[in-house]
Image 1 (cartoon, rainbow, N blue to C red):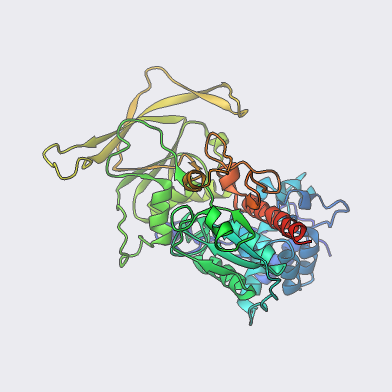
Image 2: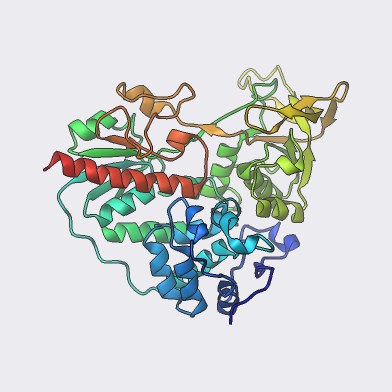
Length: 472
């Protein structure tokens, strides 16, 4: 019988008081009974509108129908036809703005919990799989993928399945890109990312870590000297932005990228970690996106009192609703309609050995109000007169977005880029350099995991056509 409940099955989670002191995964996942019950809420609509909201076009009603039948492995195989990272996407995709926003059940009630079902199915498969996939027979053509984040992994996955000899070049010592350095363990356990990567290796993908393309080797050298017939650039957007206000060079001021990399990749939250991280008492995180929520929730788990400082209101926060709710439950204070104008600190001018020895003691802010809409369509924040105040903090984390690293641009003269640093590429990833494709945040600026995967898949298809056309 179909389940006509207007409400989706809630996701079991750790108690907020308990989880705010640990880095274990917050969401605990559906039980098989909950998954089947939720799957029966799907109406299996004739026009399948949910698929149009998925950047990689997962056959959503088909996999949900398998879940409703209790065929969880069959459901996974349907997802795997379109997505190379289902356990990741089920956890971090903004389904509420994508597939679930198109769900007919959402017109008069809650949409079907598509993301939660995807996570359940992927976790079931990972828990019950007994062997890695067989290695694909090589077709003799080599492709280089720069960056092992979601765009690079998706591109490599599709290409290796077509028989290509694929090598991923990763700058860091561990593959996974933003999945391992940017997203906290409590949202995306790193063991899940590692399992997805091991699956790609089993198919034949080679991964070279500690390789900074643009320094260790250039794009031109990969093609001209190393024999790669095509290159995909999926290096993401890892260059942090700052406000350029006084005091940003003080000790205790982090970019969200640095803070999260120390926490996630280097495990600085562990007592035995060799990577230091400040154990602050009061932290201000400037920004309102998912990265800001991640940084704030990490700081909370390190024992700090945490403020989210955002210049617009709660309704304008760009972060996922679920992440905002989790942050509030964990005791994080939202200081909206607030904008920093200076970071204050203590300086010791007698310490000549360390000219940047100042330490954060407070942040000077002003109150804001929303005026007329700006170019983005959002109401523009305007400073309130005579509203200056001081927020007592000893650490400030800037979560204001990122832009692509200019290294590849500066070492590949034939590669056209935007004024803000993004690589110019068409909808299938073709750049101004023949045989070089690009996708994900390196092209668009900061976006989502699933959009980056969609770009990687589009480029894989284009690379396949390009190499075949050259060898006809």
